[in-house]
Length: 161
Image 1 (cartoon, one colour):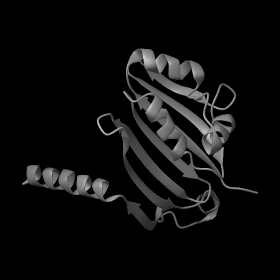
Image 2: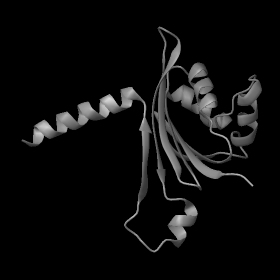
Image 3: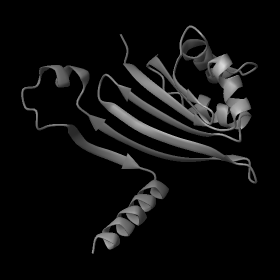
Image 4: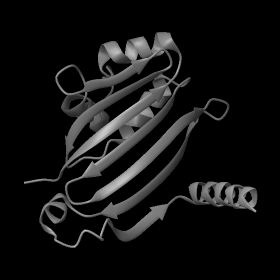
């Protein structure tokens, strides 16, 4: 047994790069280690569905089992450094998150913001009779993301007065 989940990957970038990513179904070649295992298990034509495609963005969906893929997303960013990638995931046990990244091409390192929280598990959603319990209160965010939320909330609050 393991933990099953869903993941959506949204990529925003130049049309020619998105064409390549769509054709390969986000599967990278010539990688090793854990990322090669992730590529074989979750990417490529058998494993990923393209859900939306426009000139400057691509949205893909895939299922996963027991393995987060953030390491692989960073490899995508390194190869397609002109792109911005959002990775949304949720598991059957209620673990949920949004990861957004881009490459800082001057320092050649990824810039990532991530927010994770715990919702009701699939079993709890299906069987609990108390419908007022949308999420279990357990949230973490990296400091940059929290600061961005404070700035955005403060800006919104000042506009209302």
